Image 1: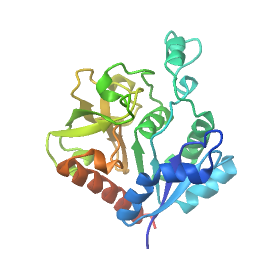
Image 2: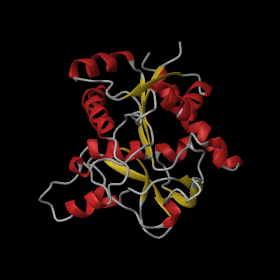
Image 3: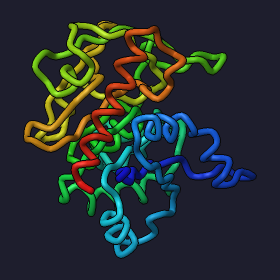
Image 4: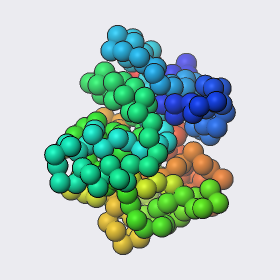
Length: 253
């Protein structure tokens, strides 16, 4: 039986439909289906309330928090905090309906212990949901989407003897794509998370994390679903990550 994988996606922009969002996010669905999972797109305001979130969680075997717009600073900084105004200035790509839907869903999903794969924005959302913080605007160009819309690239160092390192096939380094301008350093990690990959740009950004207990919960700052961005080794590592996630979700069916 194929596990049911929920994939959170962007809220449709004015003039766009749910179908438009699903079409532009097809790489996530394809990656899940190639790993023998059944993908279910989740688009705000779904789930619209706590009752809907609780019902949805029962039907899911795994959850992907995908890439997208910025997390609003109010979710990780208080208005009276010294860095709040700076964070607000760095908040460039809002999707507040998605913020609310994802945090609502996670309040019900996290206690189940079911698998989570968090990608780019999802990596940031999950860290915040667990009590962590974010850098609102990362300045290093290697992390940002380029002016022509293509990905930035840089190397990451993988922490040995972690679940992520094992899933990706070992090795000390990986060359990854990069399409983000929010991020985090180790002291911003939520309690119960440990770093599994760090940027080699020189800014000490955390590029991967996992939980310190036995749950299958992995976050990566890069985009493994954008398979065409990679060379042969990174393509296989990306496919292996989705296979491992779907296999973990299958154990929940």
